[in-house]
Length: 216
Image (cartoon, rainbow, N blue to C red; front, side, top):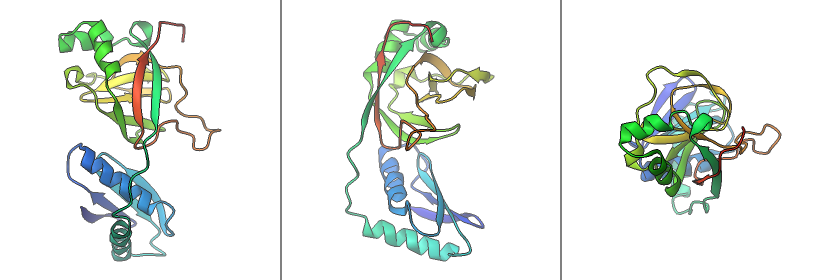
């Protein structure tokens, strides 16, 4: 782990520079250790780093770094919580997944095989970010890796299930986006009236379940 100032009121904790399960577990543990600590205003997890926003009126950079190291050391033997397992029903292809044929052409697979592979994997929610509660999922079968669109769409429908390079994700709200859309779910991923509002959280395990074409 490396710790360095990121602004006058934040520190960046880094656990390597790649996407890995070890880095994810370190980010998740750090997030749990620092959640609710007085003086810590916000935590922003990513694949292999955690941005810690703090109140400079209460603590200095050096004090927050010391606090981080102390909290991590005191929680070193704490086992992570049992992951939640969530199934996402997906209607693949057609109007729900306009880029499925492009993914098939790029990978040299049939559309049916793309769906089979996509639905056969178990995905890990590394973190949520980007737009409101967009889940970044690891575990995409490498055969399905497909570059993002050269020009992002101005409008991606809510619930769109997508591939971006070697990553998978789901658009929880309508927004612009450049990932390849291969399907769509009716499941609500962001509900402002729920507590907490996002359906998916860091550490969850996700499986996609194909369902028949239906009006969305």
